[in-house]
Image (cartoon, rainbow, N blue to C red; front, side):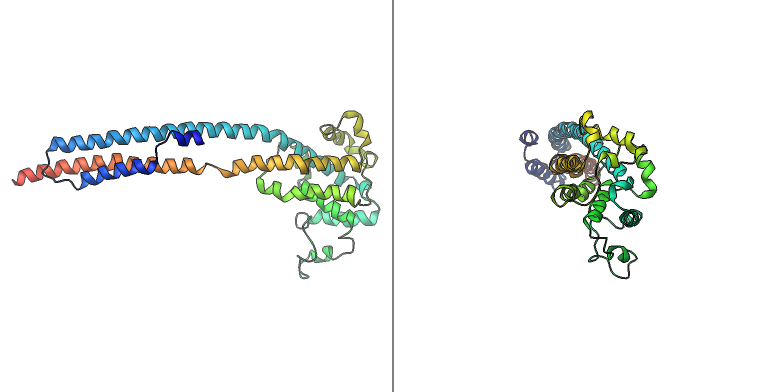
Length: 305
């Protein structure tokens, strides 16, 4: 960016020069020699061409560099997005494995939470839902604020898939993420650590409690995070470590990369483009119009004489 700025003369100076030339031509005495008027317009158009060429060159170089930067960001972002998708699929198999979540009374309540997602998630509480809201019965239940329920809602928030869309989610591999999505789920990764390691919820987070029909797919996704010989030793500590890695490394990196996409075209390039339009209008179009009108006026003036 600084290199581009260094090769561009102050745009205000170029516009000032053009403006002075335009004013001189617009207010020049109509009795001026026609050839002299033509020469002045030619000088104005020529100087405009020089300034415009500099601006166009800067824009082309800048956009080329910007495209290269976006390509590099995309190249860095794709593997992180794929890693996040694999982790979300791990969470799906954990959510779908009822043995992980304890007794039947607990799992019945958790199924209600699953049905209500995304209208009930990790951010829901009885303090931000009114009594008249149909969700209030759920959030006011004694089971709602248990560690198991909090962990379950945290996982649902990162998983971020409606029950009706589960199969579509599992069958797809590539998923696109926005900056706001990443910010929304960021703290949930820390909450997984909290409810598995710091204040452990009473859940059976282990390989043996993953439903048998899901184990092959679960192993495939988990193999991207741990060595193959560790897969069947999956437990809450391993899950906590993986989540921590996302919280401390992967998600901040994704947020940084996505913020570059969200920033769009830098203000410098927008300013240069506006500058180029002003140069063309005031240094090319108006002089050409003025030249034409001046010729007509000169011919009329001579005819009257």
